[in-house]
Amino acid sequence: MLSPELIKKIRKIHIKCGRLVNSVMAGQYKSIFRGSGIEFEEVREYIPGDEVKSIDWKVSARMGRPYVKLYREERELIVMLLLDMSASTQFGTCDSIKKETAAETAAIIAFNAIRNNDKVGAILFTDRVEKYIPPKKGSSHVWRVIKEIFEFKPEHKKTNVQNALFYLSKVARKKTVSFIISDFITNENYEKELKITSKKHKLFAVILSDPKEFALPKSGIILIEDLETGELLELYRDNEEYNQLSFHENTIKTLKKASVESKKISTSDSVANELTKYFRYLEKRKR
Image (cartoon, rainbow, N blue to C red; front, side, top):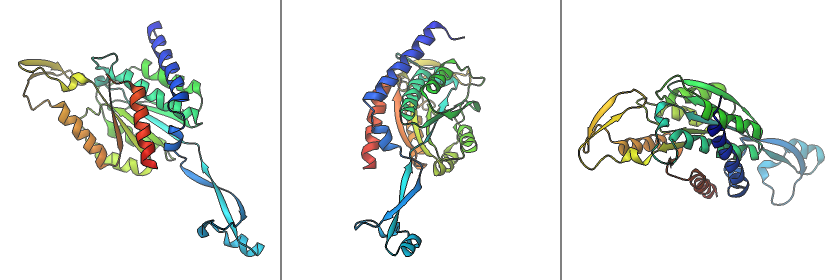
């Protein structure tokens, strides 16, 4: 049973994201994420300027003059949200924790998809896939996805991106536009699975972070707890064992090697502003 406070938070995200999609992001999503293929629609008589390769030679021979094939784009997409629900996403020193930042990110993407009549599904994972929400259409389905993210209590604490990607390939027979929303804090090597999955699906990565992850005290000793293992670490300011910035940069390199577009979003950021800027960037690249 959700608490009144949590219900209020979910409704706030639901309303905020719905308004944002109808105003700021209108048109951007549609121009960036096009249909996965084309379908034959009809033939019509050739007009000067038409591409020669579109001529239907059989119909042309039968009619005694050239005809071309016309196609229409398959607009409907399947959008999959792969959400990291591991213990490290409970961390946050700003207005929200990573899990809430992930929920808002997922909500904005989902609303864009639904507005364009696309299906949305979700995979909630830790070091294994813990919940699968099959793709569906409709704003009520978006509400369910957001609610599930906040309400969900994972059984495991660690992170395994490779398992989530493998599961996506297993359940998604058609090509999808998929967003991996995670802090990517894991010792597992997922580069190979990234490359395999990105050949079949269009993958995007949203890298979650918090400002305090990159700011150790200027001097002295700090005691930190690994949220995923429970291990306590005693670190000095110049301790090379814990260099989150370096780890973060390696994550970006791994994604780039697999040709996966990535966007960093911090718990201190406005998710709406960051995604709007990112969508504009992707839109310009497609021109």
